Length: 172
Image (tube, rainbow, N blue to C red; front, side):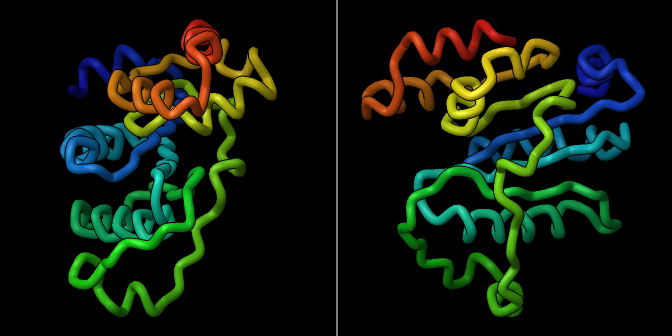
């Protein structure tokens, strides 16, 4: 994994953005990727993006990172586009974390212009929004995407057109 990341990240000021919906397949990928990025001391922004209750999933990500690392590595967590539905989180997140009322910055605060690599594990909602605003935004960014299911779901729900998806993917 380190060799592949070293090939993709060859600059001194590398910046990686990872989007995730915190589903089990994403968490397995993150358990492999994040320690490698930590070893390379890469600035990493994690955008938690999901269909339901993004704040709760961001708290879950914070717990996941705390359990993954004994020492603190600076991963920044942002919330993405979400609906307002709530999850029952009893037993998933320690009560003291829920009571701390964490506030995570919104995904629009992530500097996509400086991203060297975008690892897209979640649906591409935010990227479609950004691409419509600035079609050249990702011209200097590499993207790795695990997205066949997520893209198909967006198309089936008529959230976007096939043209908007292909235009976005062509921009990398």
